Amino acid sequence: MTLQGKTLFMTGGSRGIGRAIALRAAQDGANIALAAKTAEPHPQLEGTVYSVAKEIEALGGKALPLVVDARDDVRLKEAVDEAASTFGGIDILVNNASAIQLTGTLDTPMKRFDLMMSVNVRATFAASQACLPYLLKSQNPHILNLSPPLSMNPKWFKSHCAYTMSKYGMSMCVLGMSEEFKNQGVAVNALWPRTTIATAAVNMLGGDAFIKASRRPEIMADAAYIILTRDSKKWTGHFFIDDEVLASEGVTDLDAYAVTPGGRLIPDFFLD
View 1 (cartoon, one colour):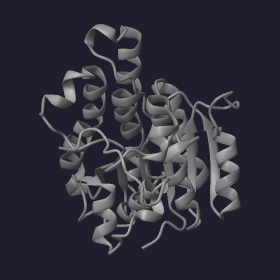
View 2 (view 1 turned 180 degrees about the vertical axis):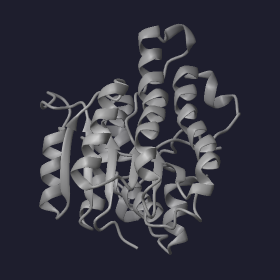
View 3 (view 1 turned 45 degrees about the vertical axis):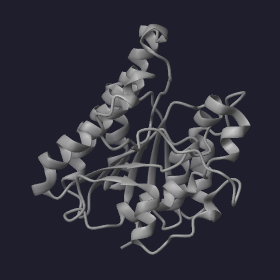
View 4 (view 1 turned 180 degrees about the horizontal axis):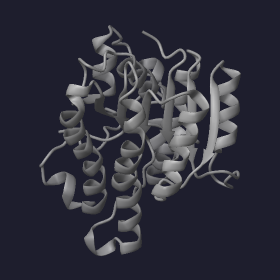
């Protein structure tokens, strides 16, 4: 199974992991609707919804760039409907948009709390709700949330309670929706990295030192590709880790994904 002719709706995707997943799908000739808010170049961040659309087209995919703030559920629904109208349906939703702030309770302004809850939890729910009527008509429908396995270990809450709640909210969508729609053939899964990934967020948190000790976004893209090409009726309700997915397909030498091959790697959050 490939993604040729399949339609993906992606929240975020103007850079980082979302962009990498989109470009991997484009290699198969997939249709990709990019719903991201970055329309104009950012002075410090690479990529816009339009620049990634050009990259998708260059690789043989079809792109529909959509300027969307994932917090706006009305605009999000409009974008989903436009994507379905343009490509004749939707087969895959990737909930990639995310906001992060690793601060404790007293140092987290409510404005930032609301941002993380709105982008991480609410947008995931809203995008899923908007896409499901189309997914239910697909032959192999998937929802993939970029969120961690659920854990009640207090260490994941004590230093950044708000962020953890928001990411676990995405994972709880997996838990609930996978069970809700499994008899209708819609796969709902999560994917999370074993190590930090070389993205703008990681650079913001730890600078060049963190980037050098990370893996490239392509490891997440390759893992996502494996998940999204599996039978949706047989693979749902899983909290996948990138290296485990690759190992299940016989890929165990991951040095090529490292920013610094042979160097140390920083473990990501939420993995006990």
